[in-house]
Length: 137
Image (cartoon, rainbow, N blue to C red; front, side, top):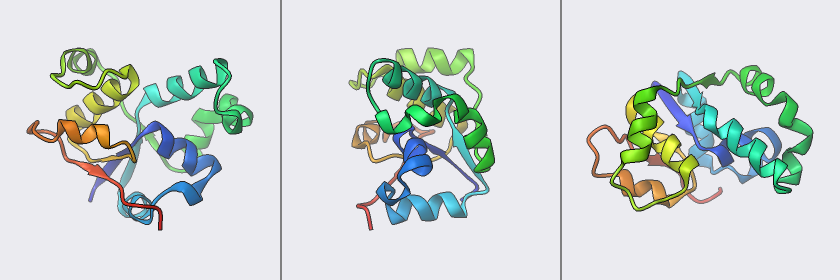
């Protein structure tokens, strides 16, 4: 596997609670030549903190970019094309962050590490490379 993209919760857990990651997720991240972070994941984390959620992430919010880079993660681009794909996907899932993450994974043609089975709804699309997860080991 050359590269993988990680969902917002995978990013957060890799920083504050690695035990929550499945063995399959950890193995995929370790085997990948690149672990890609969608920029909207930082937006989602910051917004949840601002809205009073995700207390465990509060001490890290001002350091998110640095923490990602220190772990060797790379940031995905978020292009106009990705934005259009996110908005126009024939996918019943309405969460805007998940739609942006899904569109980014589709456009980059890389698998997504996520516990969220809603992404399996993208399985019929030709550029979808699948979702990586299993139960926590």
